[in-house]
Image: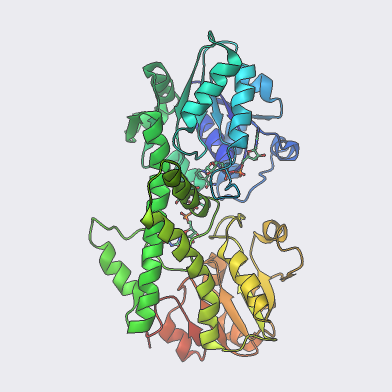
Length: 437
Ligand SMILES: NC(=O)C1=CN([C@@H]2O[C@H](COP(=O)(O)OP(=O)(O)OC[C@H]3O[C@@H](n4cnc5c(N)ncnc54)[C@H](O)[C@@H]3O)[C@@H](O)[C@H]2O)C=CC1
Ligand SMILES: O=C(O)[C@H]1O[C@H](OP(=O)(O)OP(=O)(O)OC[C@H]2O[C@@H](n3ccc(=O)[nH]c3=O)[C@H](O)[C@@H]2O)[C@H](O)[C@@H](O)[C@@H]1O
């Protein structure tokens, strides 16, 4: 078991730090955001992530998990330093690595004996090598350290379970000593026979981008098939289910919708396009996925116009602002594309989300935020279900119909049964199920 410092206490840093403590390590999570650390010290969780508080509490209580703003000391006290800072898209779509360089710099400054720098953030291929060179330059020839790539595959909304029970652990390293240390860090998983992928740094870095881009491609593919279903009289649910029965395809990530969002698929697909460009070769596939996904988000408004052709002066209820359920994260949420497009058409929006309103308000401070799905539907000319929160799966549909000025319901997540909705008197739209009667 190791003494670990996790730098960056966001979605990944906080969940990883907590999970690593749960595996028996001694972990201190640090961040430059003092408010975040203050909250954590008081036992409060700064993000909405189901099940996280319980695991944080039990590890804090067991003395294995702490929070601090003293990054220098935390690094000096640790053998393994995880960097889990953000790598958001830069102006041209490439990953902005400023936070990673900042962590490498503070690591180098506090290198007082052998330590492992573990890059957990998603970074372009070659970054690990550059981090190594930067630390070497700053800490000197005699400094003793290794750089490891250990990409993370957790999903928001199910992050705790994903971290504690991963499909695989990827360790990219150029020194067996560092690999052994990483195996010790993840010993609890190793004992549970979780697959380990031991490889070089470049492969580990690329595994992460390739995995995310592949999943984004799968979603985009089924979205296009859904769009086709609407034109030719097929039902995308039946098509996807039957496709998924082929073990080579698998049923996962074949759910059509308003386009993928979130802090990773959009930014990682864009970054992968840039990585291809940098080495002078072209990716037609990933570029097409990025473009098709933008189109899919905009298509939501076209679908609505098929149900009510003129949106000018209409009131539209939006249910769901987060990019997926069970998270307060609204980064690249499809609602962020759809709402401005509706406003451009002259519509007025009333919206509701169970937890993501605060995050959404940072970019859209002046929207009409309502306290419930029913408030949002009150007097609206149509409702668009944008995120499949559980509470939107169990709506009192008769009540919704009464509240709406006209019973137009666009279900971008295919939560409801088209035949049932039409029977109830809704003018109902879906993604790829237009012909179900
Ligand atoms: N969010 C997710 O579901 C997943 C994210 N990733 C990757 O993990 C990385 C982190 O993502 P998130 O946790 O979503 O980001 P985030 O934005 O939630 O958290 C990043 C944290 O790093 C802190 N930070 C920034 N610069 C710092 C510095 N110099 N020193 C100390 N702290 C600093 C910020 O204050 C923030 O709290 C990204 O590269 C992302 O692509 C990977 C897998 C899943
Ligand atoms: O690198 C990351 O940050 C993470 O990105 C995704 O996780 P996340 O973005 O949290 O959530 P997902 O469940 O993958 O959903 C992403 C987007 O795709 C959409 N989606 C997902 C699945 C599907 O079948 N259809 C679909 O439209 C979701 O609604 C959401 O907008 C990956 O699933 C994680 O493995 C990865 O670690």
